[in-house]
Length: 167
Length: 137
Figure 1 (cartoon, each protein chain N blue to C red):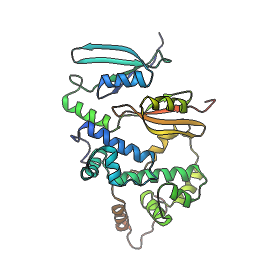
Figure 2 (cartoon, rainbow over the protein chains, first blue to last red; figure 1 turned 135 degrees about the vertical axis):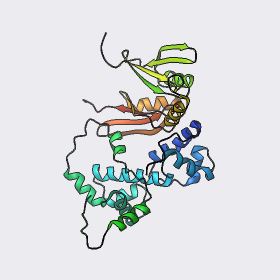
Figure 3 (spheres, rainbow over the protein chains, first blue to last red; figure 1 turned 90 degrees about the vertical axis):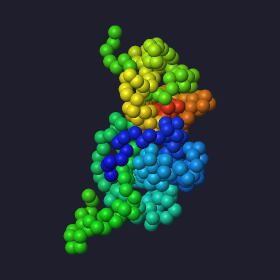
């Protein structure tokens, strides 16, 4: 996970500024679908170059970046609203409750319901930080693909060992 | 004199472009604009905040080496510089006014816990939150 990204990427700042626009658009509407052609149009980059340029610039492929934003927003809705989990799923861009629950657990290590219960139980003293920055700080740091994360966790589960509920 | 923070600088990709943005689109005033060879010390000021200057600087030699300057230009263009917050009385009115002048907003005004915030970027990529505080805070 280290080794790349600490040096300048050598990308043209003008291109980076346009790629940032695609990232901003996903931030603003993470519940919408963001296929590569749409993102490439926002950045004024060819579809063939977009995904690679985006990953080089921001360290993650565009679809995974979108996933982190959706999970971040789902966490905020679970924490701050009374919306049922089903509605949180649809509000954050998932078409299926099952996919949402599975992905959420894979990324965060707990189910949407568990996260809500835990957040409710904890008291927060974060009143002095603007809420917009707080939510960014709670964004999952998804440095590997969800499928890879699943695989690693499956490997960690040694048969017979006890699995703790919350890491 | 009053003690405290006097100048905080931003890195921008082009000082002329930044000057135009902060003055014409955001309503800041030029405080200092002095050149010495290739170097230009440029600061602007919010009209209601005379004790604070916002510096608009380019990453350039001899302050930093050429490779570092390039890295900084990339970081700015990627929106990787630290958060900036502009306090306003009326976020929605400011949003309408600034948007009409062509400011690139990245988030429309949203009310959260009684405060209203919106986001915009300067042409270089520096990200601003514009916040209307909750009444009474």
